[in-house]
Amino acid sequence: MNCDRQSRAPECLVPHLPGRVGTRRRWFAALALLLGVALALGVGEVLLRAVVNFQLLGSEDGFTRLMRQGPRETVDTVSGGRQIFRPSEHPDIGWEPIPRVEVGHIRINAGGFRGREYPPSPPPGVERIVVLGDSETFGFNLREEETFPSILESRLNARGGRRFEALNFAAPGYNTANQLAVLRKRAIRYRPGIVVLMYNFNDPEIGDPYLVLGRGLPSRSYLYLLAAYLHKRATALPDLRARARTAVEYYHLLHASPYGEASRRLVLEMADFAQQHGACCVLVIDPHIADREPLGDKYPYRDIHARLAALASESITVVDPLAALAAANPDPTVWWIGPYDRHKNAAAHAVIADCVAEVILRGAETIPVSAPTGPQ
Image (cartoon, rainbow, N blue to C red; front, side):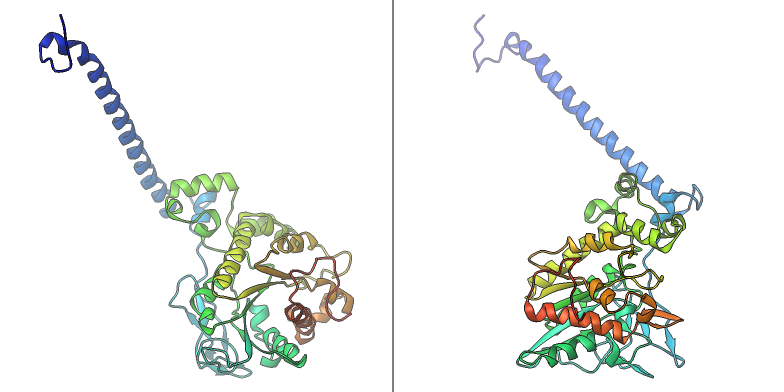
């Protein structure tokens, strides 16, 4: 029989039926498999969310503790019976100074940050700097002129030539995620040419598990976050603190953990954002002095300094004032505000400000960790 392409005879169609039926069956099998996988993932997602939200495995489950760990929403800082901070309208900022509050030596301007009033744009011929940080930079127990931003401004302007303004956008308790949010939502409106981040060793204490385990659309899935949790061996911050026997061990664990990784990633994002808005980024590694560790050869945090110094690039200038502080006095207690406040005093901020001012005026790419900088 001669079966051509136009033939409709049943005898000619029969040989083609098995192939078509087989193809259909394969498509149906693949579709059923996809639907089954989607259904299993959906059920697994619902069950995992129930396990976490209702603590079905108990509060001792590590993943549950991590996922229920939330970012801090505010700080309770009251002076003279008046509240200085409030929850921010931006959840990723968390909390912020209350505009136009003045209590004792602390004044918050109309823009909601510590210091005098500033117009939205810098005056002609003035280079504007925004300084990001936490309690160390805010300087709760320091007079305004003793804080790092104020001293930095004075040091720069004392050199003559270019004029500078340094705006203090720090707040107690801020971590790297809060600081990046402040830059994006508030500080960038003041048109800075330089963004200075005063990096403190507890800045990686990021409470949001989404920032620690993953970001983007996949991170909204608890199954994805569970896989990231197992892969990264992440743990809740209280568990990390409990694991450490000393403060030195804790800060090493913190910076080697997914929290440290997330913090460094956020610093890179900060530099990219600043560059997109025509500003350069200066990362200041704030030497840790609160735990009486000497600043000389036995200083135990040099590897953490090295991790941060490695972020130096065309968009990030790194300043490490450790050598300058050690050369001035290796005894950390000399740099405390007092025995009950181990934040840095005005003298320590002056040494650090000299290092930063030198780099800003020179336009250096980076200051090596081992190189002495600032006054000797």
